[in-house]
Length: 207
Image (tube, rainbow, N blue to C red):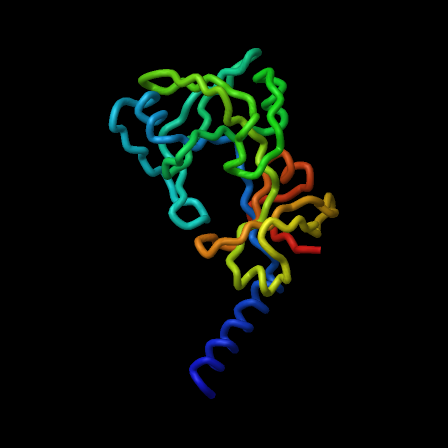
């Protein structure tokens, strides 16, 4: 057996195990991604975000820092900052949060913040008034190119997910996101997961 054949066999075996186990599930609460400028304005000049814990996606982490977000009708405290810093600040909220804040956030892919509502963000050292950046994250699956080939899907394709359990069913319009820096995982927000009776130990399957 050649080295290539051995690698291919191991590759197929690992993917078969992944198939039988389903796709891991990550459940997201409301959070915020910050630009370095906004980090400085909120927490002090040249402030560096403090790692609280690593997240499932490579090089992503939850920070010790939290902020207060204020909309036209209300505010939400202790919104977790996620790192590392980004080029633009983005606030990801739950659908129910929009009623408390008094705004209507669209369902968008992360990074797509044009023509989205703004919000006021309050940190320990200052305040930032955003003119855009509030979204409800579209449910999606992170995967590598090898994963995409195995599941026979492509980047930005919309798929449906089969969910088991007493409240199981199908979730439509789940966006596939393919990048070699990703780790295989489906991301739903807390409202979606709770509605389907899912936990962080649940697995989902492309239908």
